[in-house]
Image (cartoon, rainbow, N blue to C red; front, side, top):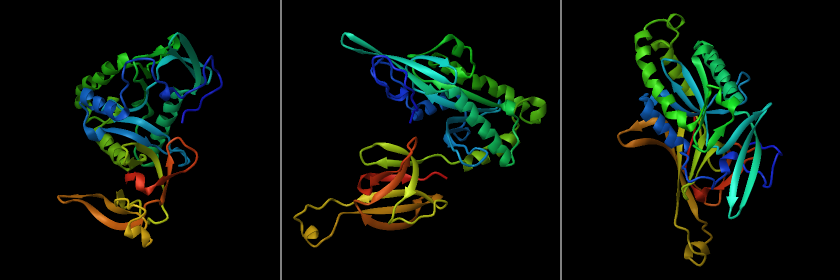
Length: 326
């Protein structure tokens, strides 16, 4: 959840992601943008990662990086922002100025937000340190933090436009196409040690892939209404599972019985069947089933939604499935 300051004019604050109605331009969602990244860069699917939660030195904070792209040129750590409005930097904070028009009245809102460039640089440094702790040495110069602004209605001030780490929507496609140009240069250097070529070697890239495959993301709850929630699954009193072995929980709800039905009169409450599937096992018949349990439909599933400081209780009857991260 965005942390906002108290600098306003005419209108109360909203988070940058929630401001709507200023423009007919459609800002892509992260999954759509990742597909665009793969298409324009030509990079293999296994070298583009999303929502990786990199632990810091103390193994405590796990802020996610929206996109990590592994290339011969280096490792690009990218956060994306759907902001619309005029963006400027003021000391340790940034300001986002948004205008909203309502009939004959124009309201202006100035929001104080955390510095996204500082944030992605910190997370990139944490990633470099995590690789070293995992036994993979990649020189700091081969890490490239970037922030991409997805909306064409986002305008950076003159000072921010000088920062090569900040990429506007109009510059995004050229930035992504540059990966194709760099690929041919890397091919000629791939067999040369990194300290000589200045690029990543085949061995380094494979070692980084091994680490990235073990990095967790967010747990994902899919609701029957189609909404998706990302965060951390905290547990359920009727469900016992081993996270290391379990990949997915599927919830199947029985038809809700009317209050005057025979079953209701006999004291039977609506129930939900939960099927747990094994991680990493995908045969020709599908995923391997670990266990099945039946729970009351009004059972609360405890879930910490990303960005929230308190746990949420989600009724099992509303859940379609839960995908657990590593």
